[in-house]
Length: 107
Length: 125
Image (cartoon, rainbow over all chains, first blue to last red; front, top):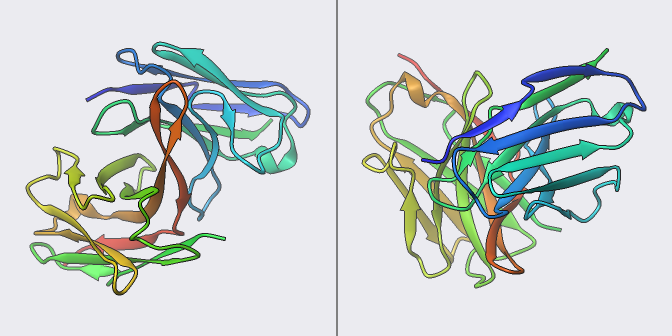
């Protein structure tokens, strides 16, 4: 199985901050990387797919980048509604695997 | 607008069988454009991919669950189902059904886009 390691596991930030979350795969996954946001009691919501394509309706403050085994989710200016947990998911090979999540909390 | 929702028993005893159903509005499980998948979230919040059913009817399961899981589609009822048997305490989780589309760029990238709201399953005697 491909292991997905997210860092940090949690962070504290303020509204307006730039936030960066990384996801490292245990092998190259050729850009087959998707990012999700989850709020308490809700299902994960797709933010970015195929490394860098923004899902319809997602603010442009979110962006994704990376290649090979290293990927990044960036929130350029954190908004109050962005406090949540973020997960990466690789769909390069089965079984698909998730990162362990990054909780973005209020500083 | 696509909507998915799961239904299930909520509480299951160890060694019993679990069946969850996923219903769909705003689409059809018979569509050749999408695949359908189950994912679960353990109490510690880790997400685990369970398996997928392709529009051909073929399935692929996580090897960690393969011996116990079955995913099927009933296009006449517009439902797809997850069966897990027998269950143990380690199967306690919130179970999500979701849709998969293929993002065709330089490769065919599977993307899990729409999710149900999730249904909690507790395995306890």
